[in-house]
Image 1: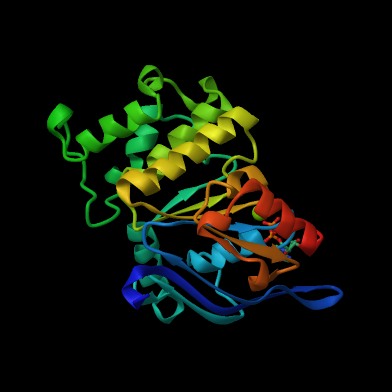
Image 2: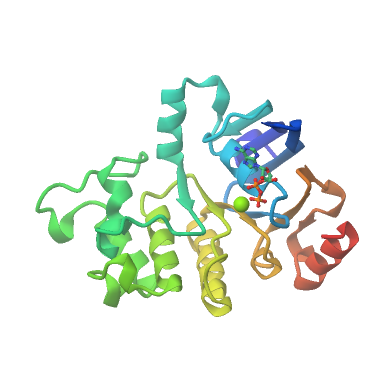
Length: 261
Ligand SMILES: Nc1ncnc2c1ncn2[C@@H]1O[C@H](COP(=O)(O)OP(=O)(O)O)[C@@H](O)[C@H]1O
Ligand SMILES: [Mg+2]
């Protein structure tokens, strides 16, 4: 595969944290990549280093060692400002606890990335732009696909967990980011709402060519992926990596069993 087809490439990443007991590695020797248009999952139990890894590959937390290439840029060779802009322009984030703005409506939350000018496709919604505002078609499409029409004027506290997460995914997709990064997006919602969320991710890959990196401890989520990496105690176990047709609930259960996680 040619390098341009990798949206994200992590090479030999390490992260050490210091505690009173000394320095310990939370992430060790981790390399993986995310091909364009694919849904790649990093799966591991609580405390295995998933969030730390996601923070490193998204530019939020410098690694103790190793490199990250995001959208063709050596992430940690950039200035802090350069990294912030690259993150803003290329990544759509989805979090376990949604991170919606409480005093904005669903519609306003979804459109937020357009207002702050993220991405080459993003546009600043001009005052009074109404139906013709650039980005409006995509907004309408997402709202319909995500079944949020009836909720556009609601505030986050008036929504179910599933509705909040669908809102936050629509917000992540609105500026057509190069990659969506999701940290345990189904961790706080019901099983059926979680399945709906994963179907929406799968669909945005299949229909929009969206690239997605997901971290989760949930095997049901992982089963929607093109590729699954297994993280245990901060290490990726490449011999258990699953791809393509091998990504099945049984295959995932088998890898988890063999790894003892
Ligand atoms: N800033 C930090 N300082 C010290 N230890 C940390 C820090 N962040 C995470 N850790 C530790 O690193 C380990 C992995 O954490 P995390 O990446 O959050 O795992 P996960 O997301 O898989 O649950 C945990 O033991 C956690 O306590
Ligand atoms: Mg975490």
